[in-house]
Length: 291
Length: 162
Image (cartoon, rainbow over all chains, first blue to last red; front, side, top):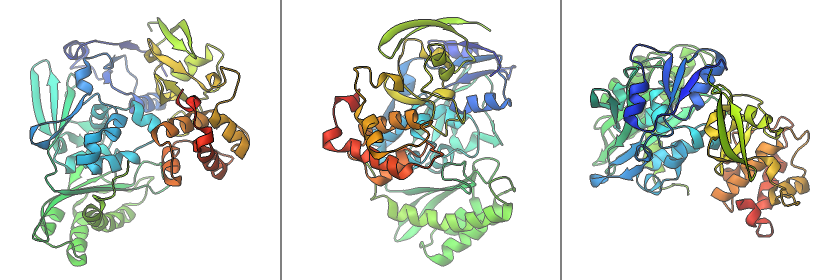
């Protein structure tokens, strides 16, 4: 890697003050596992990294709040989330997702906030947390603002975060009986970046899907909700005809391009099939939480 | 840019050295003549650079050297510090779980971490946990066998938890 400076502030306020709203070569680093790949590839060359490791430990806590919402400090590692007792008990879809997210070494180091802020559409946590209706709290010199996670992404590796803003907390509302699942397809090797990710969550009322959220990632340039597919699932039983119609609608409305992971036509077909499977998985998966 | 002095515990000994922000943990270890952690894929995928930081496995190639400051770092070279191979190392030998041996330090360290998380692992647990370690000699069946052998009661000892 090419030389750069690294500063290690000990408070969130100090970290924000060290960021530069005008200079893209000054960036925060949380776990660094994704950023270092960009630096090694030469696509990002920082002048200064603002390391967040020494800021207050409260930004790395995971807790269940009143009402059952899950509050995740942005500096919690992915392993912390994976092995958190409450996450396993109340948000099994997160635990299942983390098991196949990269590998244990990366999960030991990568931070939840970094995984969201990086803006890489191939990552697993953004679609799942978006499907669960997660909100993020963002801190800057001006104070805090809140945003639904699904509104964080502006494009390929692009977010709406300003250069001097940091995600501090992720809040996931209680599932309250909602079903959720995530399916990813890797087209070359099992540990490859996915060609497609599909995350769904929905309630079940009188045997029908209610209030569905369908989120597509990896095949699209950013994490994207599938409004037409959601409309077609609303009020329907999880039967082939309804699921296939929703899959077709998603394949039509998603903006998918060909790349090294597969052609656009191939990924559209994956989406048709995986949306159906994701709904089925959500309905059947909650029982099988692994230790 | 700014070189800095860092102090940390390396394989049980307090050490101090100078490094720079753009160096990674593998490069730092090389300053101490430790070559068990190797940078192979350079992307955190292959596991050859596995190092324990405060007893947690990391990819040394994706971990800044300056982050070692104040930490306890252990490498594969420390496993036989008391003169005997660790139980996982012995199980790898007993099962012939390697050919060229290039990936073995990473597999051994990850297997020890695996046994801490899953003391009695299923094949599925082993495959998932070690999915981020690549063996180009494809000794995978023997590696899985070795992990199970190490997990057996006779092999579970304080060494696994060290």
